[in-house]
Length: 349
Ligand SMILES: [Zn+2]
Ligand SMILES: [Zn+2]
Image (cartoon, rainbow, N blue to C red):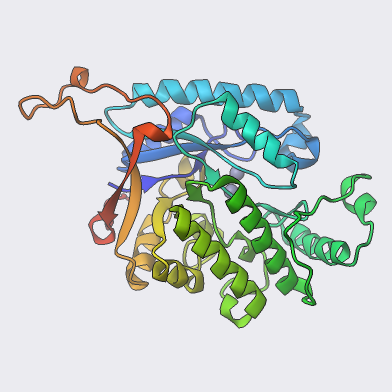
């Protein structure tokens, strides 16, 4: 009974495919027992729109309406398929600049969620996982902000880049410096939000020269990673084993072995995610993820369940009418663990 704690659908995300319902049906056919619906949060600033959204001429108001529609649809599907799969409703955070915090809080005040994913996709406001070109622009932006240069016009149409206040300036340059600022930004996100699930922890490696690099070889970067991991461990956050990396050419999911071992040593709990953006990606690469965990000596993963879900069992027979669906919210959700070896071979190829 594998699980995915991170998903998107083409119905509510311009860079994904397929309807939300077809993704859920695919998850059921792949034997998933838990599927978290975590659409990208609505963005209020067109500077943060994805290229596909800009092409479609989407406005911030469209974003708000689309997210409302997502939520409504998710609530209905959660009920419709409750016998087959446990659906949890959440969203994925973007953390582009300090003022984004109020946008996130607004989403959290408007809706009830079971959980959410804390992610960083930008450094100094430039997307770092979209293309090598943008990755390199992010390096330039970081170096320019460090130097105090006004690069605003070059990057954001006259708006000055807002860097997160706790970012430390160091002597490092190039990729190494980008890694530093990424993990400082992640720390800002972690301390501000304490996300229950942390998304693709080392996404910053995706477009770098060698994704297999060992961060322990960069003292400053490694210190920041250790700080972030210790913080996650302290507040009890769970980290995704995110198989999207394997469909983007990696041999293993996020996070890489250097970070995975550190997390293991710090007692961080892991959850499985496919980060699917359409049916073709649901449960993609799960055997690889599970084999990786086994090889790295991680024996258990965690997943969400509804508290009291099985309270309705009478005489050993579970009838649909005996099962009530708990309300949405972290207070109705519990975390349970499963053994990695028991999850092998369950997802059909
Ligand atoms: Zn996405
Ligand atoms: Zn993401």
